[in-house]
Length: 347
Image: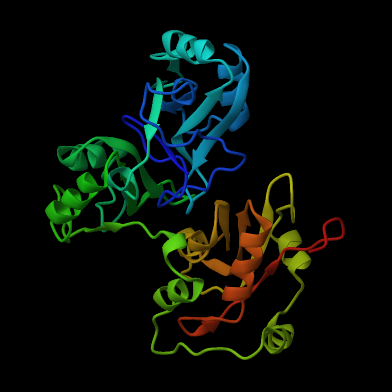
């Protein structure tokens, strides 16, 4: 089950958050009526680069911790800026609130408070926003949406090479009804500085869609066709591929591990010259937590050289993405998707 803070997002099964494990959150209860509700805390406004181990270390300095969870975005794998800490002793939880609430960490001031039960009114409040002006900042994005309710987290996707906004962002509200109001008020509207209307909708929740349904959305193209068996597709690509995966990574001057330690690295071949990181995010995000994507570009033209890499944290999710995406037609190209291999790490 899920646990919720009075002003925070759900602990698990969120629109863009991984499911918690090992009972990281206490069962839904009325706050203040049981001991469990007095040991489980939610921590908001964490620095984006703070790790789960750092979170555990910080709160472990107060007392013994039963469990700790940093919540990550299901699409990007990035921290959502909040987490849960469950103490053994209610006194330690109370001390943590008194000691750490309002603590300044980097550019953030964290908020520490007791969790509360989850309900339908506070789940699935994450929005996907596209068509944003490239000049819009994260602060301006929050100002635009804050009129509809309390914003938990926000994010604008930027080009990893240029650092320029891709015009796409995410907004997570405290409550679903606030997200619904934002959609009603802003979808199809032109915010300040925009020349075209923006699109505001609920972010995809993979748990609510089958992988096939997701794929049907990703590959809406007049040229689309369903491939034969994966083995046949692999054979075709052996003819088309001018070199091995390892050869490509070597020429690109990069070294991306194939599995654990950094996650499971997936090789994507036959991308179009205009392909960018956002395409990889959109393709692989629905299958699980993605920690990194990289399109290999030509140094002179900055165009995609035809291949890229995606790193996912979970093997089963990575395997499902490969099984679903290998051999699919994207535009006029058929993709080859497989685990990256090298002499040290074999898929």
